[in-house]
Image 1 (cartoon, helix red, strand yellow):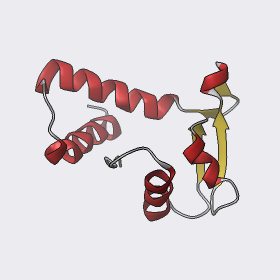
Image 2: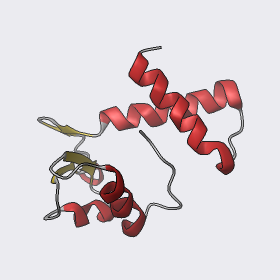
Image 3: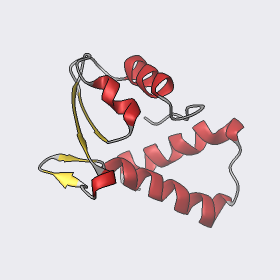
Length: 103
């Protein structure tokens, strides 16, 4: 599941995670400051340091979610050409469905 958020500040990111991610889950992120607030909460959290050119460390990476954004961008450019904020959630649902179903 992917959802649009108003902006990528700590309040929106952590609030969305707390609302939609099961306690005890493992979360991998990159080194955006907002994700630092996950440390010591209800999740197992580890991150890679994109700012220092670290993209993978063992099982810790963000490649999976980055492929979601890449496919979304290609779909907008190649199929839809324009996406409104009003319907962004629907476009995200379509991409998630396609990735989960392998279509």
